Length: 165
Figure 1 (cartoon, helix red, strand yellow):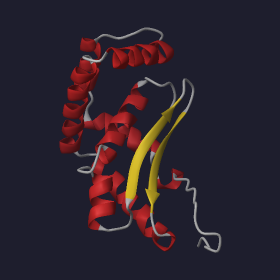
Figure 2: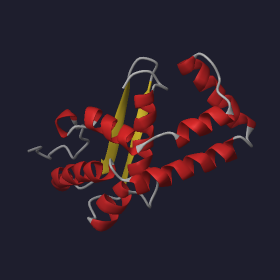
Figure 3: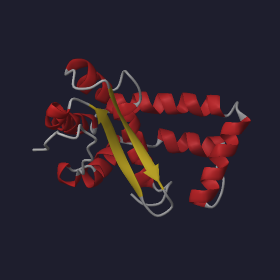
Figure 4: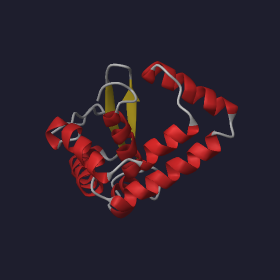
């Protein structure tokens, strides 16, 4: 994942929202509500002009961390081809775009990010078109490239006496 606004970064942002856009999205619904593996779970992206990372965080019982990781991997596999989730995210992003264009502070924030990552600001119609043009094939391709199970790195914060297996 490279430059902040390249297409792959955009598609990973969409996927982050597809799995972690709120309480009605798969990470929360599946891992928290259905399986009861955690209280808090979510995904985030950190972007820089030259590099970035995709994170999924979870607060779980240390004894159940493997089960939680496996559940997260299943959510990723199932969600990467969900046109329903993609359309839900597109609608949310378009709604937020319209609301943000009523807030001068949000407009300034977007312009600054565009200048940093693109070298120029974008207008409302350009951003709207970018959102509308994302396809599920784009999402699946970047997920397959960057979120492979063998590329997962885990960081633990656990009780001192906990032994990681």
